Length: 444
Image (spheres, helix red, strand yellow):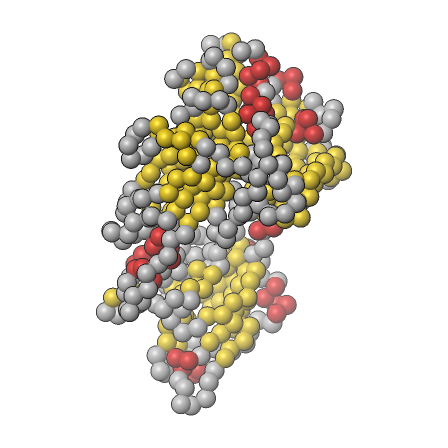
């Protein structure tokens, strides 16, 4: 294999022409934006490995309705040859449904022996929790009892020797994204990408090139190039390329690509560089570039807390299932993500920190004063955090619009919170019926 052939390997396996088809994306599907398998030539081949973990914390909880679907780059179902996890023999399928027990990890591994092909995969979870008469105890009431995690990477081999291993993260659907770019063709450095159209329709995507400028304390060039393209819903569900091909004349470049699309896409970006062994060039290697999802950077939200509900301030999110307990004792697994809980009786109301979380009252704040609280204002050198509950009973004067408090989550994030409004009920209702709407801003 020549140096040029090896250098363009990833590009070649992404651009194999295929037939037209349109897979539908269901709610909750996880997308693996790049799967590659097969033999390139007499010395080089590729195989992809998917490790899927049953995340349930409860013995006896099996995963039987999670299916992995394989597709060519245009969406046609891909009959791919795997090493069957059960029989250990080769099997050719375009989908595989798991039967995965508690605390088990299943590997789907392509064989890398047939014709070279590339595409993507979808992990679809249709598990349904079993609702029991006592949902405060039985674990099946919570959907996360039947979740899985997926780790994917592909290997580049010469014979049976692994030349390179490249991670393929599960993609987050996005409309706006960014990733760093480096191009230095004279030294074998280039940046490539794969984009999968997740919309069940045609999708217009535009890449904007921004170039670093000296001094970097000043502005970069945000008009270094624009590349618009259309991903139709049939012939090109997935687009792959090197940025040096899209932005003509760019042989040496460092900066960022910003992307915007009409509908959701999944993205993988890779940087390619030369590999040397004993001072001699031995091929190329690839590293995964982590994209930033700029449409997921919003850190403020408005949500309700009702009595006995838990708040995960890192997300943020309020759990609407009943407080899980066994004879009045909270079940550790379920409260682990929670940072605070609104604990009430007929006469008392408290905000209780959980799982190593620390909280601090900040007093009454106007909306403007709350907005002006910055991350340095929440530093422990400024705010006295503790594991003590905050009294929100009627007699405390804290259960009112404008009362603020700070949270240092069990993951180490700092959060400012302000009561937007309270809902109280007249007799014969009690304190236990009261609710509050919270303005929440997470520094992460």
